[in-house]
Length: 165
Ligand code: ZN
Image (cartoon, rainbow, N blue to C red; front, side, top):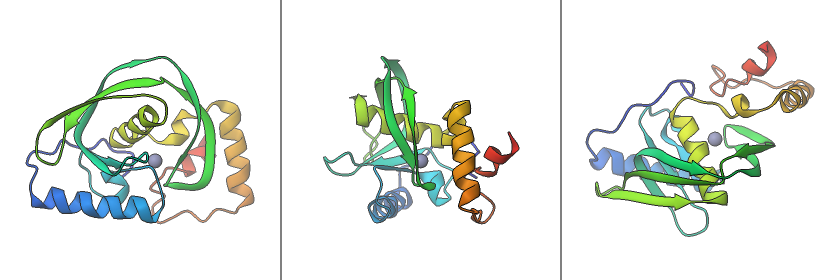
């Protein structure tokens, strides 16, 4: 399900609010910096994040502008224990809605900008392994093989993709 693009939220109702609550809990339990709804099996465009200033939720997020370049050691809650230096734009302009249906517009750079891009990838059905270069992919393959990785049910993170390339 992580490989499918998620759909927009039409009504920001009590169900969405309680989903956001449980996503925040899951994110803190992990612990992680961000979590997309499809990581908890809900195919809707919602993500939560906390880069140290408290938890926020963004509904129907879109990146409308990006600039610069920044390399960051990026991991994913869906691939525990692994991370890679990944180059992405440094700063992005994110728009969307908050839980009250108000428009949000955030210019995020460095870690904040990275979280936005990572979570947007999830919502677009793009896996972190797809952001790896050839060498990183080979290295990841080695690590995963040496762990004799037991694929979680259905391989939601597409790790088997690493083996088929
Ligand atoms: Zn992730």
